[in-house]
Image (cartoon, rainbow, N blue to C red; front, side, top):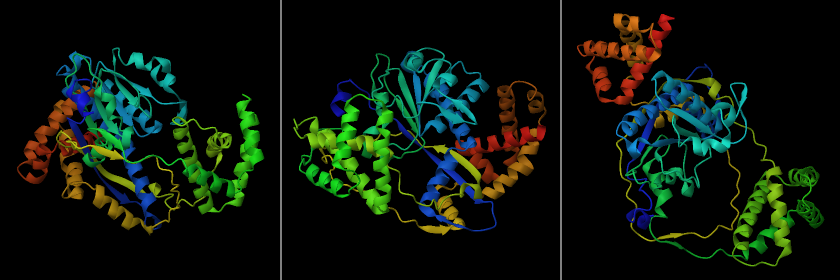
Length: 485
């Protein structure tokens, strides 16, 4: 990477990396205090918060505003810059697509978004796909994004590895990234008019991204070779589990190589999967599946560089590749089920930190060989009371507002009524949503100036913190609209 950057073949995507911190507060809405698996519960709570419609809308507004005001207004790539939104899944991508469409229309933007994901997905009770949402075939996405009015490509595990688009200037990340899958590298393609690129990241931190890129910055050396003899041990252990017989392996592979219908493979695979469930306990299932995955990965790697003549290994590799998707996960009770139904989101805001250059170490790096040890294990739940889980969660991710309840009450009882009474804002509500929002923000500014006299703490946060200002504006706008209706 270092040499390629210095010689101008690619751009340094870490030069203006900007993390965005999320802050939120969750509250219990039930009287009881049930127990949940703390680790799983916190994952569900984070997913609930970050996929909440309010959070998606707020982040979409930040992305759209940034693109207009700090990418297009300064003519990045000669005014041809494009942006990619990297999401954590299909549901999230579709949410963002709708939020982008609504906000782009609201601010009368000349630009539009494209969504990219595989297959069909049910959203709000309707089966949707790329074609039904975008209005054109999936095969045209890569070409369409190069043409106006399309400027935003919202992706769920597509167009991230191997995607070569020099017009891509900005990336908005709302997905945990790791290793070589750190999709930020999609930005580094050079273009005659491209002098920089930009990353706004809502999920990862400096340490995560530095770790993902460090091994590939300078010379990368393999610490030691992958041991091919481990394949003997893995095959022996898999055979001894007695999940399958040699005859089943032979029959399945012959059927598969005979280019027959998939329907003829399923009965064999289903029979083996049934033995897997019946014969092995939970630990045994985890161990077998882990060893099967390692065997396939190691054999596929080694067979590409070593001319093996071992037909048994080849057959077993084919057999396991087809069998693995059929093996069910160990049945375990979801001890975090129902936690989302027991909580409400009290507040949510995001705060952009300053853009920064990530400095990678200028040393040669060693990377480990392909792992050939199976590392499957079962996890033990850690039960805790809902109140304790929420307290811990809020302490880690909670808002930085010094007195959230007091601020919220001040907004509801004092600020919102004064904004709603503003004559210019009342008149503007009869016009377009964008015009009404502009008038609202002007009215809010006047009310906050008056507030300076008796609540300097709230006024100071409003003037100094963009995220707090957006939080107050959104809350007041929602309250005044609700009151108007």
